[in-house]
Length: 147
Image (cartoon, rainbow, N blue to C red; front, side, top):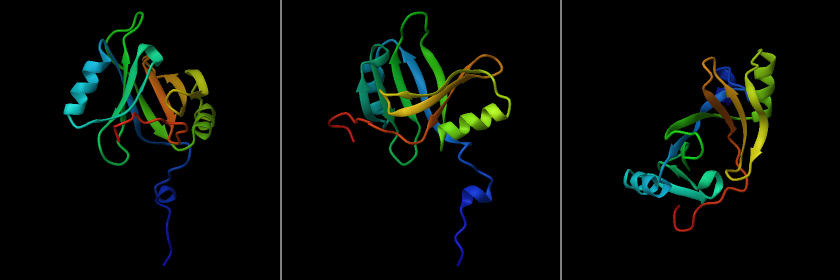
C-alpha cells in the first residue's frame, strides 16, 4: 500500500493558506466579551496586557480559529479589526506572494511575542487589513484554570 500526501495531491504547498487562524475583535470591555463567549462554549486560552488588555478564546475541538479580543484604543472603532489566515510556513508564503507580484505588504514576517505567532501584514485591493499567521506557535501561555 502506498501512502499519498494529500497536500501534494491537491496541489497544496507550504506557501498556501490552509485555514483561518484568528479573527480580531476590538471591543470596549474585554471582560464582558470573555464572559459572553464563555457562555457560548468558547474556552479562554490566554489573557495579556498588550493592546490595552486582551484575551484569546477558542471553540472546543481541533483546528478551531481563535477570537483575539482587544480593548478599543485611539482612533479604532469597535468591530472586526482583521481576519488572519493560517499558513504552514510564513517565510515561504511571503516569498511566494512577493514572487507573484503582491506588493501591498506593510509588515514583512515578524514575531508577535504576546501570541507566539509569526505574522505578515498586508492590505487587500480595497485597503482592508489582512494578516497571515504561521501555524507554528512558540511560548504560548494558557490561562490558569482554563484548558
